[in-house]
Image 1: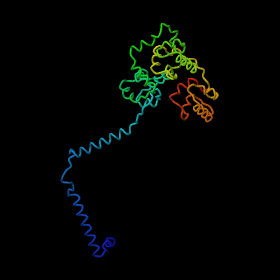
Image 2 (image 1 turned 180 degrees about the vertical axis):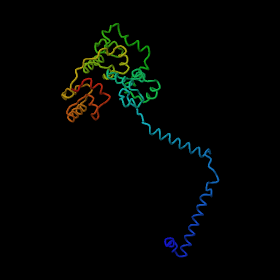
Image 3 (image 1 turned 30 degrees about the horizontal axis):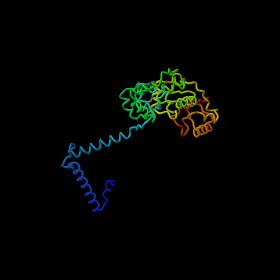
Length: 297
């Protein structure tokens, strides 16, 4: 009984305050339960303003999704890697076909040729070909080929009754080359001299590197002469070659030669010739031609 009494030991004013507090709590409970606080005017979700706001949200979501997608920048399709090909949507078989083609030392110079080599579908070609970026000389060659006419084609061999001794560009003599319209004594000598410097043409595209030989003339030349047999190039061991001998590589200048030797000093020995790509400032677009003359042993 004393336990219950202890709860009423408050003064009269305190007991009245507690009583009023209890009444207020009960009143608030009734208000919360029985009074409707929802607005009288209901929001119409199909109202023009509401729908416009919804459209804005949807458009912002789409922009956000587009920004999250990996961006594709212009690239040379000759240097597509396994990872890059997978990103573009190519299958492993299609990528392997491209890599096998590149190992032959040949280059792809058009989107049609890319599809022929890889056998990708028309839809995939259309979606990625807009990002293809070929070297400037390839673009110029295409423009010149489009401007050529059937009359130009007849001029390739109209120079004389001379019978060409060989259509292999690596075996052709000066007189053979001079049958092409636009090639005289000096240019034919220059082609043969450059061929000797290269130890033979490994790819027809190397003819575009001959100084003074215009794109239009090269196009005419390649309609008659081909690389029938690959040259037997004497390769140098990059790990033991001297600075002077490495500098004789037609695609290596003094600065690049220094970089290669500095890199060799860092790694002691190249295990694979592809390590050249690790050199800062190495011309990747010339890699396939540089390694025609080098090996890592």
